[in-house]
Amino acid sequence: MGIGSDPVITLIIGSLILIAAALVWDELGRYLAPVLKRYRARFIPGRVTWRTFLPLIVSLILAILMRTVLVSTYFIIAGILITAHFMRRTKEKQRLLSARRIFQLILAFRSTFQLQPSVFLTLDVVKEKVDEPLKSLVKVVVQTYYLTSSPERAFAELRARTDNVYLNQFAYILEMSETARADAVVKALDNLVDRLRTHDELRRQTESSMTAITAQTTFMQVIAILAVLTVAAVPTLRGPYVSIGGQIFLIAIFTIILAASYYIDRVISELVERIS
Image (tube, rainbow, N blue to C red; front, side, top):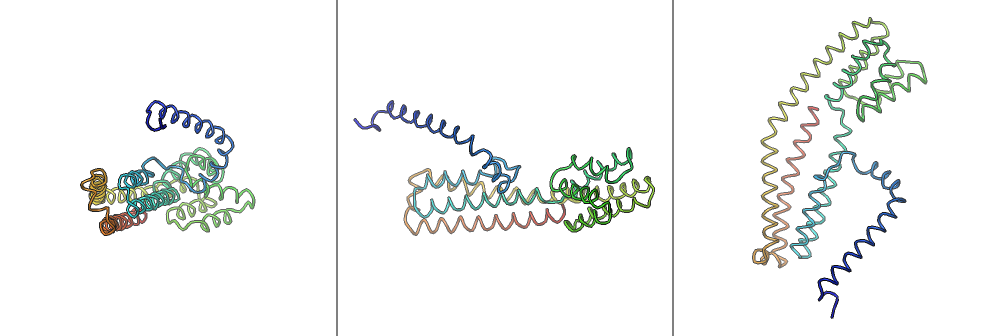
């Protein structure tokens, strides 16, 4: 009697393999955890969610269901490329100096500065209240000042690392604090906050107007995936696409859908970056 002919024996062997694999993974995990953590921080954005890997999961399912060399290989490669694109976009968003983040920095600085009217002491405190990349930028400013005792060099380091308009205006106000009264600095910060509020309102209106376009693109993608899943799952529908010509036709259709989706996504991302 073969192993595959007895379901009970097959289940026992499968369970033993899973248990052995879990034990090996647990043992290796203790040694590999520091290495994996270092490479994850380098190559994988910190806020990656399961949705980022959803295209890869769907592509693997489609590849398994289709069971054809060309189409299955195409789906796997497409899933990897789409997932890499999502990860890169997530990393770019984390590096983006959005107006909202600068708004939070200025509010935190303003409230602390009113209690202790010292620019660099206040920056040293508020750097812990903001996320990256603002945290690193503020940290550089504070460290440069403590090393050189020169506000000019400290803010020059900031300008060398970013050309953000609002952050440069913030730096100019802080430089002005060397000769201006504390209430004048607070008033200048309030004016900057008002401009950032206006900018944020424009961003919200733009994102709201883009909701319809994003929804239509998502709907088109879902319909395309469901159609391919149906074709892959039903043998009678999959039949015409088993031949080389059928596989090439399916790849061409899916490539057109992916190209259109990428173009729309790129245009929307560039617009969002412009108003962020």
